[in-house]
Amino acid sequence: MTDHPHQLYAVLFTEAAQTRLGGFTCGDEPWSRHVTEWIRGSDVHHSMRRGTRVWLFETAGHEIVGFGSVGTSIWRWPPPDGASATIVLIPMLGIDARFRGQPSDPDWRYSCQIMKHLLSEGQCIAREWPGDRGPAPHWLVLMVHRDNVRAIRFYERCGFELIPGVVRRKDHLVMKVWIGG
Amino acid sequence: MSATLLRDDAETIARLDSVVCLLEWTRSLPPSTRTRFFAALAECSDAAQQVVVSQIGVIKNPHTAAAERQRALTTIGDTLSLRLDEVEERGASSMAHGCQQKAGTQEEAFAHRLRQLMEARRISQQEIADRIGCSQPAISQMLNRHCRPQKRTIVKLAEALNVHARDLWPDIEAVEMLDAVGSFQQDDYVMSDAEAHALRDTTRRNRPKIQPQSLPPRRG
Image (tube, rainbow over all chains, first blue to last red; front, side, top):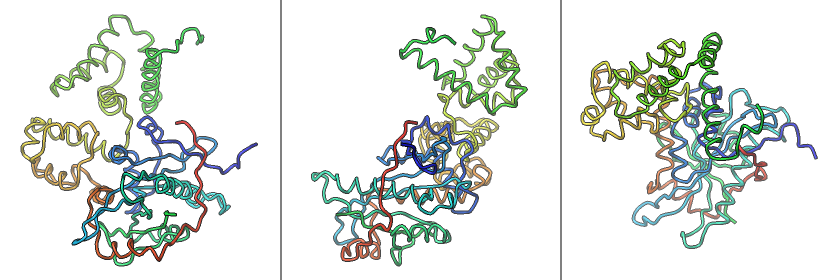
């Protein structure tokens, strides 16, 4: 059976795969430049060393459309509790500026295919969480710049909600979606 | 090439890896230089090959002084009909760093500028490390692009070298953003009250509005 022409494929990211990112750019907006730098520089390796999984997403013709990542982090409840909670997070995802809003068919929109994949991986982490590592994570969170309205709307369409009253470093907002059972 | 020339063993695969590295590197050269380079390579006498191999050994040696590296680059450039600046800009880093290809990144430009400034001021890695209060291996990691410096480190380096932070990393805003991403992943982050309230409230389970689905895997 032939795949749909807009089907994306997930390639597990490796250092060798970085050589394929020569012309890859996520755009020149203030909230985009560092996204390109993250995947093409050493930040991606630093993140992978702490357990983050990273994929390149490519077309049937091996053109790289974007990348995404899923990992976990241990956060602590504020005092006096102070106990730890595991959170699944999307440290970074990006789409090459050439592929934004493509294809026009919303069922096959690249951004949507990528997010479906990351949500599936997040759910997989939550579902297969070993019992001896404490309570399974229930939330998938991501960070988005407050001026990146286009991305915020996209994440909301995918089911994410902004956590009210939370602003992280450099004007980043935090969004969450339930991935527990 | 006949398949019989290629054996399915580690040595052959390693050699093919080197060929790929060479092709990747030369792809970034101007076409005329590329042609000249391959012509020079094809005509390379045994003696010339030995010169190139020995000079690459000099460049790859972490204890080689800057001036000595420069001389080695000049020798390779002369032997292979490459101008000195092309060898420096395009090739030396990939040859010296296991063919890592991170060309065109801000991190690469930073490493290049830092190295240039240190050489111009005759400051060793240990000296700059002492001045900013970090270790020499940390400086080495930055120069070899194995580790991105945080903004505060760039500021300290700039002060130590008597330049502006933007002289080292012009898009300092991108560094701040990357630092923010780094802190987002950090363990032991203590949630704010607002975050704790939202994540403890399991009565409001906003689920995905799209159907999670893994994409078909492919090998890189």
